[in-house]
Length: 185
View 1 (spheres, rainbow, N blue to C red):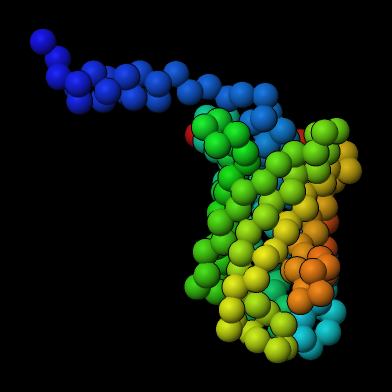
View 2: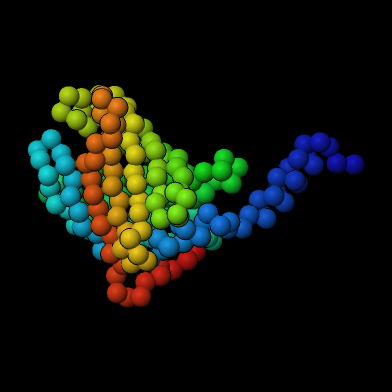
């Protein structure tokens, strides 16, 4: 006769085997492919242009990994990794972001708008203003919008002391003409 722990372990294992992409994952599937990236970032030194590339792949339609490389403000090169998925238990989009230019790991939670064009991701991160570079954590909001299937825009905002969202990054992603879908794993 199986113990309660054995039954719970079997039930959890069966539930994990049954995970299939949901409607919410379909939106993330649009990210899959190779992208050319260009945009601007506002830093304490002023507005700087940046360029790069990104490849997004799917992990069985449940998780999406975006690996980017490009010019950073200040002239250095940077590498970034973004993970995104939809957590069916929490009922929200979740993700993380890391980059070679910092030691902080960003953790996202968000939602898709009712028209299914804009994914808004909220997080906490280091204060990069002149007053307190890295001295405290403040709210951030990233807004990812599909203009069409081959063009998306990411805008990043930091919440100011006045409670208003201040944009500081605007990146345009253009699907490369290779027809695009990156390989799936």
